[in-house]
Amino acid sequence: MINKLDAALSLHQNVLRVRGQRQELIAANIANADTPNYKARDLDFGAVMKNAMSGVAQEGFNTSKTSTQHLDGAPSKVALAGGALFRPVMQGSVDGNTVDMDVERNQFADNAIRYEASLIMINGQLKSMLSAIQSQ
Image 1 (cartoon, rainbow, N blue to C red):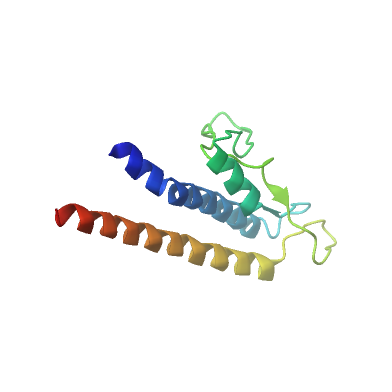
Image 2 (cartoon, rainbow, N blue to C red):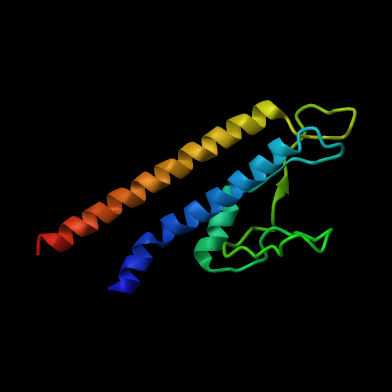
């Protein structure tokens, strides 16, 4: 029974993980909008989901500690297809920063809406299962 439940929800579980990781990347882009030479990054959602569903495990975000007081980064459980990709440059800047705040805000909102939609689908699926179990 547990394996069937896990299999039924595994797609949504992977979607939520990848959407969460994408939201972190977009938030980092927004936070570094004024950082010189910062390059905006994003995930290829389709490629990452394909790897996640095939069970391929790769490193998550590559992080390095610059101080002994920093926390160790935990590797991601969801496969990243080659890691985060650099977002194409829409408009160059003098300081080398490639973050376009309009693009980032739109992507952040779009990803948040899709994350919420996945939660609603999981909730509906669980309610259907609960209803089927209770009617027996």
